[in-house]
Amino acid sequence: MKASELKTALITGASSGIGWATAQVLASRGWTVYALARREDRLEKLKQEFPKNIVPLGLDLRKELSRLSECVDLKSIGVLINNAGLARGTAAIDKTSKEDWLEMYETNVLSLIEITQMLLPSMIERKAGDIVNIGSVAGYQTYPGGSIYASTKFCVRALTESWRKDLLGKGIRVIGIHPGMVETEFSKVRFRGDEEKAAAVYKGMRPLTAQDVARSMAWSLELPRHINIESMLLMPTDQAAAGMVARS
Image 1 (cartoon, one colour):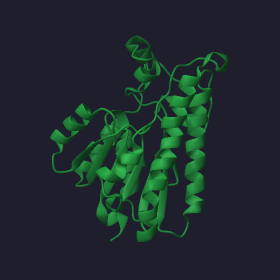
Image 2 (cartoon, one colour):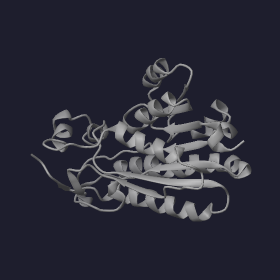
Image 3 (cartoon, one colour):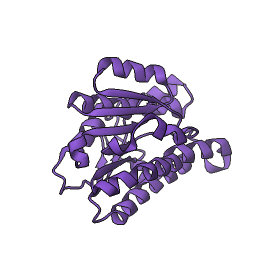
């Protein structure tokens, strides 16, 4: 059975934002979705919305990935969506903290590599599967105060492009989705809960929504298998580059 026929996806960072929206979109289209995140209460709300399609996995990517095989049959996963990621602060490099560096790299890069390695053997054995990495415009363009975050997203883009070559001929698609500004909890997390600062990021412009990104991802996954969307840079009309935004 091919991964596309399984219609089973594992989504990291599924308790909010793009991950939540992607779980909703895929579940509404009949997919079985393993929704992985730390916040189990939110995952349960997602399951209540789609009781037949959502399977909550309350795990901390940075600390508990070794338990994943105890919670789900890895051979049943047709699609891995590496969505979990975060930014911390907007300080210049001389003022950033090691704690923030580690949190961003462990979440955005190291856990992405680890979970992908866990799922690849069964995909290679089946000669079918999809790996979707959620990057960012920050993986193409840097900006002041975003050096560590941008470096993690440059890394995600490099991994995506390299894995596409590593897995050539094995029946596995590697898809990179790289959004610009998306109004989710991202900025609230970046500013450690400061809602005023978070709201100011999107003031006077129309950002993407999590649903916009989720629908683009679903479209990429449901294309015929001979088509691989290697890289999709998805931008709001009001944003032309990182830090270049039209505001009314």
